[in-house]
Amino acid sequence: MRHLTPTAVAALALLFSTFAFAADQPALPPGEKEAKARLDASPRHGEWVEIAVPGSDAKMKAFVVYPERKEKAPVVIVIQEIFGLSDWIRSVADQLAADGFIAIAPDLLSGPAGKGTDALGDRSAVTKAVSGLDPKLVTTMLNATRDYALKIPAANGKTATIGFCWGGGTSFRYATEQPDLNAAVVYYGTSPNAAALEKLKAPVLGNYGGNDNRVNATIKPAEDKVKELKKTYEPNIYEGAGHGFLRQQDGQNGANQKAAEQAWPKTITFLRENTK
Image (cartoon, rainbow, N blue to C red):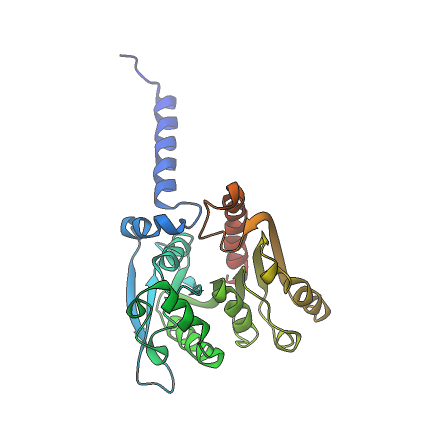
């Protein structure tokens, strides 16, 4: 049997440790089909909490995942798609924790809004319920989530939002309503109107599929208004990708996967830069 030199042994050790790190901390959130398995295999601490919401006796449920790091961490509020607080949204929270953030995903169909996503049963009932949510109530619930998160001992006092589809539009809208938010990320969500953008303070990053004109038609008016206001909105459109590309990475003949691989690193860099 051939003996390896010390240099070769060190190189192999580095290679194996790199593979192990990559397996534990993948570069992207999983696609929808892999979400449950990713959650089950996660080494990070995730837990369900209950959050008091002003004006209601019913507490809202939320899923919190903590990063494994020595320093205090910024908080990212993960806003659900129109499909509610799904395993996929929870897997996004887990990936954000792998990237160094405390991630908290509120169930916006719980507390004063109802008994929660799981209680509604099928997806059609969930989408109908999310579509009927009062935006003012949603803002109250997001503020309650943010207030709760800021009191977490491991939090560093900085907060951001990230949302997808319905949650993407909500992330952008919430950034116009919460002046102390540090950053907002929008994944294929519609933009607020010009009057709302007047109140925008936090920088906003947008990620959009090229084949999503319903949403993309709202990008240019928002971009023009934000430039006029000398504020920050960075839209990115990924050609060939469809709506929901981060969840459906196997769609659009590879374009969704390519979009996800480009959008997620931009997202993490943006969040890190604005929540130091």
